[in-house]
Image (tube, rainbow, N blue to C red; front, side, top):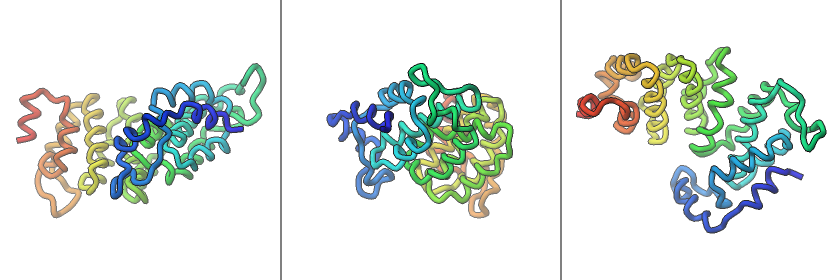
Length: 258
């Protein structure tokens, strides 16, 4: 029995379904078109995962990610984050007995391989944002980061491309901002609003660590595309700029916007 799924199904709330479907843009032509919901909000999902993650293995998580229900995919990803965070440390114990299927048998490398194999099921912004940097970001802290550049530039979906930039949040939190700026350049003129928001958000976070670096980035010449001439703050999408400078003092923020 998949404990995580059974616990989640018990929390289904039909009264919340319509609101969640609207929030995650599931209408015709919208980015979440056709997604289905159980009516479980994120804090409730987190509570279930906190209770159950020790009792699930990769097959259970695969079943979650293959589900048609958004919340089950999220629960599977949050459980994977927990397994990864505790992997390669000490044997798992469930109800006083060693667990034969849970995290004792799952390495951090296996978690990452599993994640990358199932990116087609990570198909909305919350699924990306709550999983990629605690997994890929942490994993790549002491490794080559070409994978994120590849995802940003050649990702099969906007979600894979979003993984490429949002994963750099972990680097930023360790005082490393170069990859964020470089990957931002890959996505600087992306056509989708959800990428504009993600890039702007990560630029803002990088600026919290190093405002001078963000200012230099915004003011420097945009060399990403010959059709765009001028400093980046003038050539980047307006939404991206607004997110990037959100924490600037108001007079400075207005000077960029004008």
